Length: 461
Image (cartoon, rainbow, N blue to C red; front, side, top):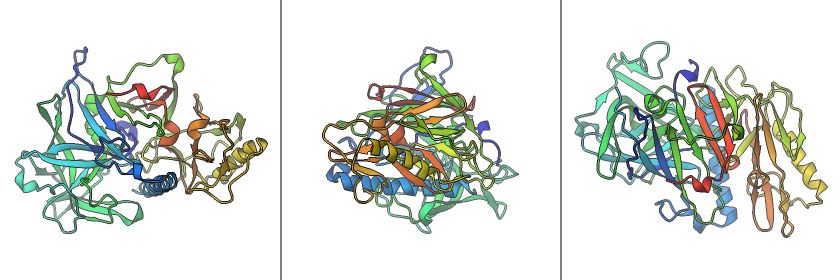
């Protein structure tokens, strides 16, 4: 697999559901090279997935942890194997269901509405298509490619289907096909195609983008069945991702700032691209190189060491390196809610060593550990009244450090708190919980990740 830096990817993060309300905002530059995506948190009443407020704290944590583990299992599976119209500006409202974000727009000459999970760890864009061999139930009508005059199958001569760099396979010399496998046994297969994706550039008009996507006829064990969501919107470094196909527009750059998850009134989030990314004071910005993997398109970082409460653990430099089989390593992913530290890292159980330092710190505070693991977290403590001396964690890179405020290193309830780290299996991941109130900038053109502290409540559309 080629180095990812020949292509651009954008992730929030996350997986995403989009509502088709976009509006135009002109740039002062001569060539427009940016746009934004507006995100609405699922906990907001604006979200059609507004269900989580009915859950107790314990039920909510259990739900998020299960999804976080499922996300990392999927990423483990992926890592081990496997002419554009340029509008002035695009802003798309986005809704989040737990860890997942979804984007909504229309496709085809008939303006068929679709909502797709946004996946920054994957590249393939796909939606269910008629006629179905095996389709999961969805609330929106299933897209019918025969009803669209702008639909076409991707020819077998296309580089994505032909040659050493191909991602798909040609069948009978006629159809370019794919078969995507996800964690937990989920899969989808179909025909690689092209279609006009219509995005609003103001309140009344849209522009079409000719997009390579998958028309899926056979999808199994999909977790988002019985919703409006009909597929996935890939944003990884993969050449078939939407971010790669938008690369001329976004200058290989995208950014987001995650507002705190405990905000009583969730605010809209904004996924920014290209020149729509705010300029930050150089003295406040940290950066580190993105590391290419031979087997995947994730945003790997060169993690060297970890500190807890100012105590540097002293891991050997190789412990977070990518293994020859593509497993291991450390990457940033807003699609995983909580940070995972590898328990099978090269050179030892990094997860256990990190938790040991947290335990020593809270032992020095004479805090009482809860009798058993709480809501899926291994290290939890009873919280004394007004206790707020939560240990911070720092990730050490060659060029700089990334420090997570103690508040965002933990899941905090009135009577207890837990260290917000999950056990990683052959991978370490910097999750969204530890990205709260951070401006994160992915610069695929330079192969750099930039980050800075920011009040993300101010980053609204």
